[in-house]
Length: 225
Image (cartoon, rainbow, N blue to C red; front, side, top):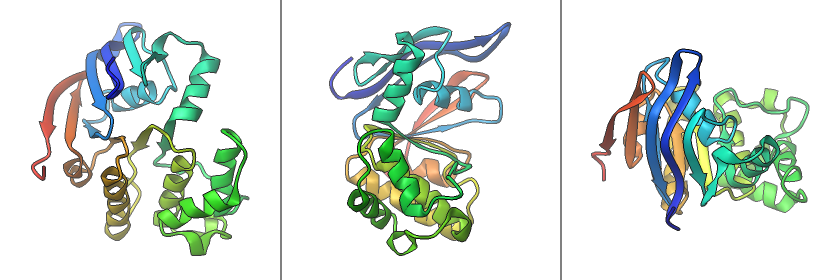
């Protein structure tokens, strides 16, 4: 694995009895890349995201993150890799309902290092939520909750940002706000992998992998490049 490659998948498969959720998938993500993963339901997107996000290990093939063979490590070490190197952004938010926006960001720091309110506020400011720091998730709109998820994912300075349908529950206005945040992150050098059904999100990325029946059906490059 070269120094510029953040992520490599070599002939990765995930098999459940006679069913292949992924079948011989190979993929490379370089530092600073923005890759989108698309495909119909059942194509293997979620399985691929879980493997990239260190939430599961493939039944065959090799996965390297930052030069380490993560498909070969223990579950405990896999959890540590996910905590230290990956910023996860979920479609369903998974915010702690009784904590404020600021505290939801700080709790992500707690599992990584010592929580610092100044850094957490800076993360909220970066997504335009500094004035909502003391609000509970229930007091935030859907778009604001998604931006809070992004701030939480960024607080530990991950080497890879992995987002699952980050605009899936948003209206057009908030979708554009989230896309603009990703564009800003990408310009700043972030490495981003987004699982999405949204062609507008995919068009903003540099490359799009389309999965069908657990295989890479095609790889396209953005016309905006």
